[in-house]
Image (cartoon, rainbow, N blue to C red; front, side, top):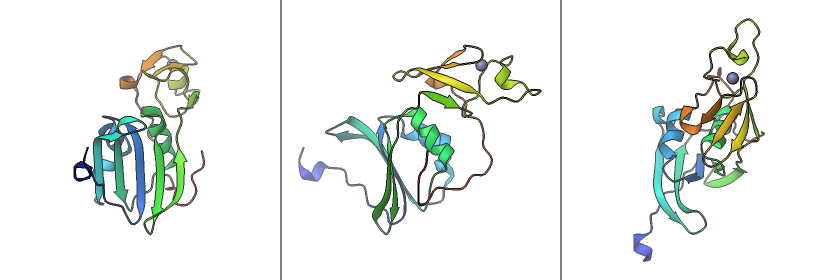
Length: 168
Ligand SMILES: [Zn+2]
């Protein structure tokens, strides 16, 4: 491929770069973390050729920082993503995501009789990760098994955006 065919994605001055997204998942990430509603400049690359990863997607969004919950949700939808925080065109923080072995209080169990959905005894949902690709997780309370397309994230109240340090 000649130099002229290479896709150039402009650098952003300040904001977040979500890179190494599994090809085809950029739009689901935008949907789930609500980036589709932002008024800020956003660049999305889909099916970009990458030497190391084959095809990948990338999202760059100016003036937007993610919450910890959003970062955790991304790590479930498309693990092995890298998230960079940009200030004055420089990367000030970089985080490599990994799919956790346990997913706590992030996903709603679809089984209405599951104890994690009980209103009398509120108890956080908890899933064991059985398989990464394709994703398969199991509720530790009722043993229900879910695939990626069945996940429903629990809505969180307003959270502080992570600007300086990402702590998981
Ligand atoms: Zn359950």
